[in-house]
Image (cartoon, rainbow, N blue to C red; front, side):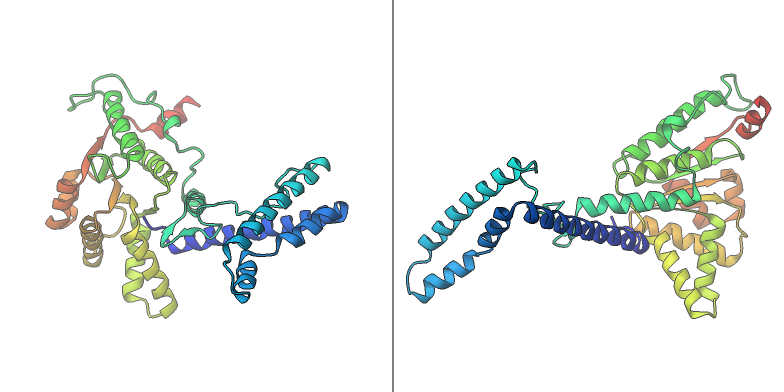
Length: 334
């Protein structure tokens, strides 16, 4: 699971800043302790004698280094105990002079071998949620805040379920898709229905919940996504083209892409090609995608190529929203 480069850069910078702040604070604390407890400073000077020095001395004398190492270890343990007692006697924690890393697994580097450490992943998750919040009010968009009160319990024309019964099912699918991301039976979701029925809200809930699991998530509108594909292809400005290429790589490579408002873009031949490329590449790479659209599946078939419609119908769990416009209902209740 790879986070996008901008998220990783910001998280790595934060990790470095945290490491530098801890080092500066440790140095200030050490200076203060040494000034008030000179014996502690002397103990630390003696502790700086290393095992390597003891081994080197033993080798120069042509003797077995093991006794020297054992003696040094015993002396160090005694000195450390004396230092802890001194610190406690003067009101300091016993480990006030210890310089251990905040994360023992990676020693604050952010990596354990070639694998990202949990400490850096947590920072990446925070940065990603902050970036998503620029597009979505993630403080408001959460499954706990979703309400069925605006969905009628009465029968709906042409449907077997009431809007409330239907939304109860859709809510459970979206909730479990997000909480069991990567393990849920449905890999991809297609949310379809008229405006104002909660498609964007539930998409944002999915984005938030999956992001909190440390998974790379990209959320964007269809208009913006295909504009980046066009910029990459046709821009004469090298920097603009490179920036667009970075964006399209995000769309293709993230663990979860949430494509909002499919159908709002112009359905030019290029956009049709870009959409097919995006859908097909993500399916081939086993990447998850959630798409929301005001288009019905019949409208999808008429608007897009047969290859696109086939992939949306065959590879996506289609969730059909129906009912009254929630925005209008809320406005009427004010």
